Image 1: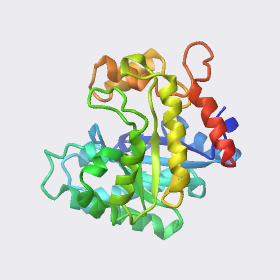
Image 2 (image 1 turned 60 degrees about the horizontal axis):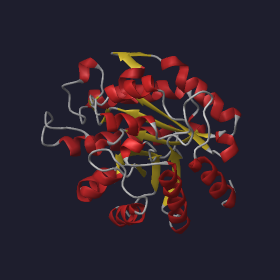
Image 3 (image 1 turned 45 degrees about the vertical axis):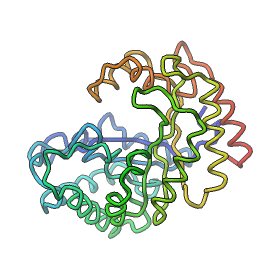
Image 4 (image 1 turned 180 degrees about the vertical axis):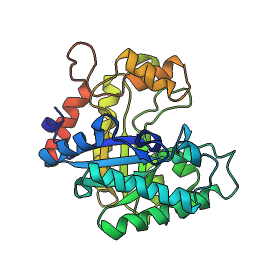
Length: 303
């Protein structure tokens, strides 16, 4: 069904500790890197990979590195070894991009030294240089939420100077996880492009839930995606790629498991996670309005 829409790349997120399960011991969880890399190659897709030493849930590093600063040589060399292992499982030639850290603007660094962001910028600089030695064409970056990036452009532009691209996630939601109107999209992205003019933008996650409890429905979701593609038409030179999240809704159990990762039990947040798909979950699933809207929008643009 993704191929029917015209998909050109697939995406995978892995925490550092999912691969380096104990210090200096590496594994490919569920053969995800190997198998998704093979799927990408077999279908002429590219592959967007995110490796997470940090994200919203905190610092995700091997146990012996937990109290180490990111500018420490040992921390850097260990991540380089992780990169070496990853590239034995997936051919870098199929990678669209490599993101180092996800939604890093939400990371709570209150337990870190005051130099945390400069440390992490140095870490990114060293890792990017290491990647470029063997794979000079591979684009590396980090990912933040659109709102978080717009709230502190001076800080994140300093971090951005160390990588090739800026990754962005965008779900227009209120603080209580109900939706904002699809029309807020233009202003949000206008501000992002104004704040970050120096590097290409890769939209790593784009989604809009449909649950009634989130003050949403299928019509709003379809309008949101239509609004985005109309905006993208005018800014294709700035926004290089978009990863739509997700094809199918989650089951109740899968949504519960996902919510636990954020230590949240809020019912509206649960429905937000559960209904981001452009297809329903029940039975074999069915297309929501957004699926057909996207199919038309993509076909019009040559996918």
